[in-house]
Structure formats: C-alpha cells, structure tokens
Image 1: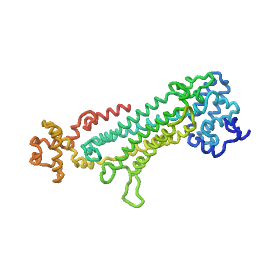
Image 2 (image 1 turned 90 degrees about the horizontal axis):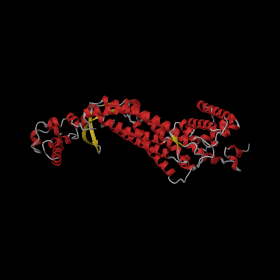
Image 3 (image 1 turned 90 degrees about the vertical axis):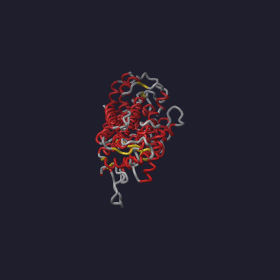
Image 4 (image 1 turned 30 degrees about the vertical axis):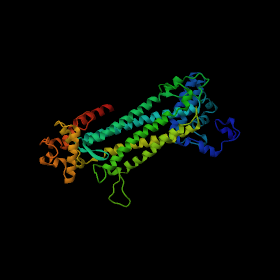
Length: 461
C-alpha cells in the first residue's frame, strides 16, 4: 500500500501528509478519554446498519467483535495511540479494521467524523456531569454537617469586609450550600439540553441511506435525534456552556476558599484547617499555609480563561464543520478535570475543618455588630428608622472616642442620645438576642437556620 493511502481518507491525495501537519493538527493526544464513548457509538451505529439491511448481519457481528477487542486493548493498556491517526475515531476504526479485515471499512457507512465527534463529546460530557452532580451533593452534605455541628457558634457577618451584624457560623456556611444548589441546577439544565443525538447527521446534509436515527438515539441514551443536520455537526454550545457553568461554580469555590484563607489566618483564627490539608514554609518554621485553598483560588483564572477560549474559537466559524472546532477539547477537559479535582479535595478539607467558636464570638462582640439591633430597638419605641439610625451612629461615635462598646455604656450615657432607651436595651443588644431575633424567612436566627438546614436536606433526598 502506498504511503498516501495509509490515511483512511487518502485516496484523493498525491502526497502523504507532512509530519509537521500531522503533529500540528492531531487532536488524538487529548482524546483517549473519548474512546469508550466512540466505541459505544460505533457499536450502536453498526447494529443499526444491520437492522436496516444496509450491511449484513454477519458483517455487523464481525465489526462489533473487532470493536470490543479494541475496547479491551484500550482498557488493558496495550492499544497503541499513533498521532498519524489524527483523532480517536480514526485510531479506533483503523485498529478495528486491522483486526477484522476489509469488512471493517463498512462501519463508516452513513456517518462522518463530523457527527461522530459531536456524539462522543456529548456522551462523554453527560457522564462527566453525572459525576460532578454527585460530587456537588457530597460537598453539600458536608456543609450541612458542619452547619449542624456548629449551630451555636456566633460570628461577625461582614459587608465590605467590615463587621456588619452578628450571625451564626451555620448561616454563613449554608450560604455556600445554596450557591452549589444553583450550580447543580445549571449542570442539570445543561444535561437536559444535551438530550438530542447528532449521530446520523453525517458530514452536514444527512445521508442517502435509510438509517434509523431514532433507534440510535434511544440506544445511546438520548431522548431524540437532532432536528437539523447542519446545526448538529457545527454545534458546540454544550462545550461553551459547560466551561461557563464550571467557571461560575468555581467562582463560588474560590469565594469560599478566600474566606477560608482569611478566617484561618492568625489575625482571625475562626477556623483551623487540618495539618494534612496545609503546607509549611521553607524558611519560616512557624508557618501553616492554606495552600489547597490558595491553589484553588488561583485555578479560577484558568477556569475563566477556558470560557473565553471556547467563545473565541466559535465566534466566527461559518456553517457547518471546520477544524477550528477540534480545538474545543483541551479547554473543556481542563475545566472538567480542574472542577472535579477541586470538588473532590474540598469536601474532606471542610470535613476536617475545626471551628473556634470562642474566637468567632469574641470577634462578633467587637465592631459594633449589634448597632442595627439598637436602631431596631428604638424603632420599636416609635422612633422613625432614619432618626434611630442617626442616634445609634452618634452613640457608636461616642464609644469609639471613649474606648467602649454599646453594651458597656451606662444608662446615663445612653440617655445623652435618647431618653427612649430603657434598661431593657442591654438584653436587646446582647449577641444571642441579636442573632435569634432575626427570624424572618432565610434569616440567621437559630430557629430559622435549623429550618433552612431541613429544607436543604430535603433537596438532597
């Protein structure tokens, strides 16, 4: 056989592919993970061809047997990936044909690599999404566990990273449960949008053979075939959307990591990370660095970059398929791998994290976190809120100048600001009162946080 004919598409060409071109254009190096899905798609396609009488039953059996041997070789590590094969589709088909002989060439009847690659990427992504959903759920379960375990811990709630109001630690960490819940729903929605099977769209205009696309769709776990063959082979929405959803999810992980880094620092000491999730310094013996959280925060830049890369790749491509689209995989796979690895490591890190409730309470007692509650107290004395706000602001200013907290002011001092203040003010601005008074739905009161936790548990059932 001549060198030019070694390519499965080589009949048109007078010269063999330049080795530089093979190395430059091959997508095979990043595609081995697609092999199980490529083989599964080929087996279903071959079964359909025989069912429709396009190829003979014995031919289909031989091809399927060859594909199963290829699958076994890949699983046991004896399969040789050759960059000259360009992509996973050619690599599998070539090896299968080597095993079964010329009949293997009939497998590609009524399909193209254009619909094949979209099929493989969708099937692979659906499997990945299932794993991510499971990982998100496991992380959410650990968040709930920490919330329940530390239900009595009071900490400062911040705006602008300045002390705002006292809140429960449980309320703080449950905020991340709901962020992850939205991430979960976005991945679920993407999974639903991927329920159309592109197999059978062929190169771009469908095929002249009497194929059964509904059969293939059903056998491969899709709801139905795609409606437009041109759109089928030029669609990478799922790739763009995955990187976008993954980036948003990672933004939530990064925000959590940022707070873990702050709260585990010597200046806060709200939480203590387990030694096996931290590293030390090569020069400073005392250091215990939250490197997992820092690394995850840093990886966010890559996750954002992957979204922009996908959008840029797709922004000006004419219909239908163009080789630009083979550049979709590196970014998407990086987003997949990075997100799954991060979810996997974050769960045990949170599980082993210890909360220093004494330190969180001390911090909440500083910074006038009960100032809003003092204003609410005055409102209940029939003082308009804006006037109450001004009164308490003046009291805070006085406290700052005299080195006191609001609850340390005498009644004589308090009366300088309002005669409406009575002895019951001290109970009204006690930290526990401030927290548990916030019983509005979704608030930080112990009662409603416990209800929130039960609502969260119900979502995971």
